[in-house]
Length: 387
Image (cartoon, rainbow, N blue to C red):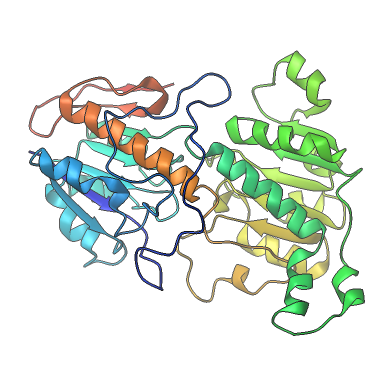
């Protein structure tokens, strides 16, 4: 029997379950491009309920325990004596989310001889040391596309929030109990007519471009894989061969590229300095793509008119993280991909992956990052790197 360790974010401050705003959510059966939504054999949760926190358990407990497996759920993942470190040595599977990542470092993987499967409930597995996972014979999987549209909607929201100066205006009528129209509009603009670009035109970046088209903006993008000509013509896109060309051409830049050595610290003082004065950056990808302190300096100097992000490093950030107090920001905790709608899909996808792995059936290729050995104790060590 297997031990599954799930590292999930803490319950709501007001207790669990919360009062839900809606009784139901739309049923999504497929995604753009033809990939189907997760298809587990069954689910033990109500779609639209809070599943990503500790008490939500991704709806997995009944399924796993009925099969005789052990499920351990915790939010305690930091420090030498964390529950993650205590429970990891005899775990077969670790499940976590990008919003509350269980950082599977080389040291942690080495301390877990039974570990054979790491699942990201959502998208983005950069919290797993992939070379160590490969050497360990592990499979690394994530629920591809489950929350891509959720993130793209969030990015568009943050663009509008910055450009229209929404948060300061909202603060005038709530926290300040005022009605200061001149102060509220002194940094507010229309998005219409602006040049807007995305760095990275994968599933999320392309969805952002499609959602921005009706705003009558001029759209730009940069990606090593150029979009098909018909898509460029449909959306009237201008392609840029590198990040600097894109950054210097746009008023608003939305980041949707993966984190890797070529993108880490990409937006430093020099690249931000090459942008138009008064530009905006929205980052729902990974925090380390931008230089933390360069962003603060650019906001202080006015080089950037605003910065909005949904990603931090580390996660959660310390109380004194400068992004908490910098001017002209619209930061959120890492929530864009964890809407209740998205949770229904990535919880179902997590169960689908577990069903396949526990039954010895292939995991669908869409979900695989690294394919390694099977159940702990089988001695399997071969692997392939999934495309």
